[in-house]
View 1 (cartoon, rainbow, N blue to C red):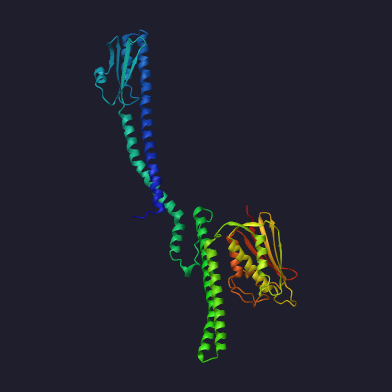
View 2 (cartoon, rainbow, N blue to C red):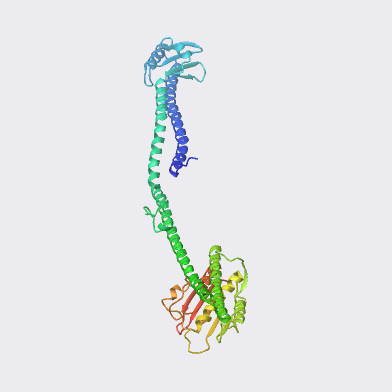
Length: 446
């Protein structure tokens, strides 16, 4: 199937609209022009016929009527001489030129005949005027329109071709440049010639899309490189331990130790793979898997009870300050994972650098306007200022006071993505007196 450009379709549609309009206007012009010429002739000749009839009604001399008829016949205001006949009670009393009555009765198509009868029907005046000049002018107008309308349409089509081509040139340039865009050339941007018109705005949107695509590809590359790096470490540990264990005969205790290290490395890879799959699922879905009411306050109490007595919590204390009936809409499993990651982060980093054995973590939730605001606060050393902007980056582990703890480096990234899929947001900040606070804001149910 032949491809037609936007320019061609616009010109075809425009000419298809102009053709009947021009044809209708030409036909109307011909009718109005021709009718106007004949109407003017009819009015003038009818006045002359009425004048002759009035003279006969005034009983003037026959010679005067004959002279008037002869004078009318030789007048050439409307072309060649006229044909005039005057009858009274059916009898011919004057005609000019001779045999005018025979000419009038011949029915020539080029002869315009005007009949006037006196009110008493006694006197009848017929004047025939040759209208060949008027008909010829009408025919010339038809010929001019027959040639002029196609020329106008041709000129309009050519002008539209040039104008539309000039308007669409940025799109053609954009299409040529976009044909060569690939993953390696995402830095290409399309020049914007007219930023205020529709084409310019569309080209600007294309450039913005290329910006987002370039950032997405760059993040994907970084994510792939970081994932490969994170997987390489446990794989190296696993391979090295197994190679050492197989290098020579060893006691059973050494084999058990090697297998324990291998199991630990395998579990680390399993956690990393699970976190990667979770993050990929959240980013692909863009919305919660289920949408049911979830009581954030009750979930905080449930999490605090689950953490109490665990080896990971140690001698740290968890304090819950949550009001009742703090419901949000979303997936309970994902929200549980979000809060678990934040509490785990606070537990692992809250006591880091402390010189006493009693770190405290406070879980609080309350309603603010139409949102549920949840905070997890620890009294640890906080996050190094240069690490704070990158706290939610994938695989980022700060080199400051919060560094040095185990983990996949995806906990805060997963928490942030869960908050986004639920229409909320996540923020992290250091406290003035020491410690760190993470704030989760989620839309309140209803």
